[in-house]
Length: 178
Image 1 (cartoon, rainbow, N blue to C red):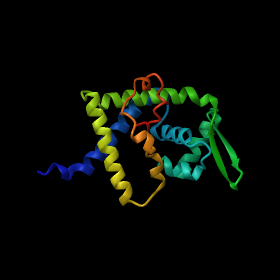
Image 2 (cartoon, helix red, strand yellow):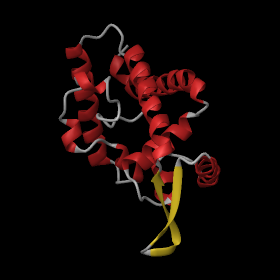
Image 3 (cartoon, rainbow, N blue to C red):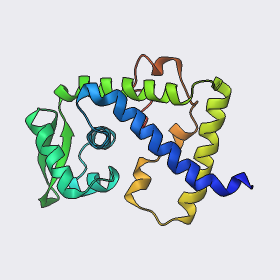
């Protein structure tokens, strides 16, 4: 059998299993993957609108409202009026969200380490380089969407796959939790 035929299925299954493993590890935080995506989306682009965040986090807008309501009650998120559009609200993190986000990144680091167990640093770097190459190829073929905002900027894409201080400062690498 031509192994290249399973490429799409394999990528999808790896993403599914990675998400499930992250959720398993994050259960102690009492956060779902959707909630972590929301925190990450705001962290990455503070001031974005709820509409953009729903697209970015791949979350239903009504579900996002419930998630944001909870996070606002918990004091993690602040909604502010958008000066350019009085109907829109901009989203910002509060200082109270910082410890939760730090723990979220620690869980993401643990989940990633488990997924990449048995691969050398060189193999990990090569895997990320190859996936980034495939992502660039597909980004040129597929119309631009809000999902493109999840892609690492070119400066991050060129950075090493792991850095010594990333384990000490999970936010430093600004990785997507999966």
